[in-house]
Image 1 (cartoon, one colour):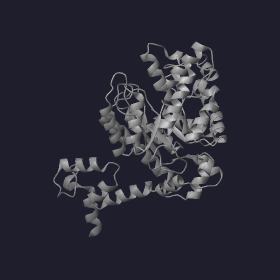
Image 2 (cartoon, one colour; image 1 turned 120 degrees about the vertical axis):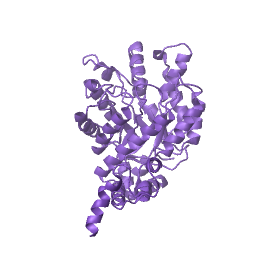
Image 3 (cartoon, one colour; image 1 turned 135 degrees about the horizontal axis):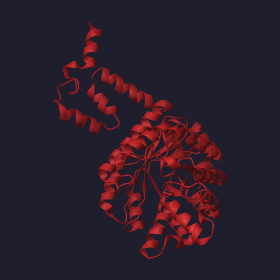
Image 4 (tube, helix red, strand yellow; image 1 turned 90 degrees about the vertical axis):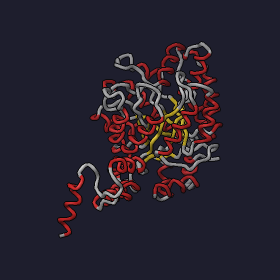
Length: 427
């Protein structure tokens, strides 16, 4: 079985490429060429059946929703509701980040029920089981980590976040460039502690060929995790972040040489004036690989509203070339998200994606806005609802405030500017 990249390297247009090309209204041969150069990926494990979606240059900006249990709150029924909610409101992928309960069973059920690509962070499961046994994360056996990666690959996971760039060298840059928040990535903090406690190199970096063997076999897309990403605006674009990015650029090249698809994860907390720079540096260093941004969050001062903060950063990042937005919910930095938080997180990111796609002139984005604008001029509420990002909420708000016979809303009433202007034009 060839990977999508290996097929592209031979000029072979696969069924998955044809399906994605139809969704995106692009030419299949053009799409094949973008995959060949690593600018587009189609994350789809050979063992996972679902309609494939593409991520990358020239395609619609995609949205990921993180869900999963925790040690403090393990209710799989609730996580199933979150999955359904994420899918209902338009998430293009979900990541199972569970750390509570029977992790393998939860993952299996997530894969069975998801109609979109599924991602994971394999080191979470290994570390969780170790802590349950009363041990410390620096006691992780690298063999257990590779066994977990292999298990998840066989189970059908489509893309995996692997913090291969947290190395002795990249971590060392944090020693001479102190941070406010240190390392905020769970995977990154685990691997830093492992490296320092064992005096050894990160096994995911040292045995990267072994990672590639597994991913090639199942056509898993590697999501190179930014384990040293900044966790506060003050830490953005520092030496540690850039040192890790240089390693990730090397690993992108090595993955492509093996025919393994790869995306790169981006910084978490970045002030507005540094977002464009971060995206362009990443695209340069990683030779145009699809960029998966975690927000980014443009201010640290809005707990409870971080879905809005993330949407602001995500829109700017996507305008400048980011391809994949990881949603942020109102629960960020506070607690495990609720079902309602998932809805708000997905919708905030979809607004960001649509805003960016209008600027990038991605197929259908400007047309959608045009249709709604024209419908507003005509006070055509049904068309407005149909083409809105969340028709259900739009219709509900309109219905709750007035009778269905009104052709205006309660904001302006009979003083509606559109009605007045149309009357003048028609005289």
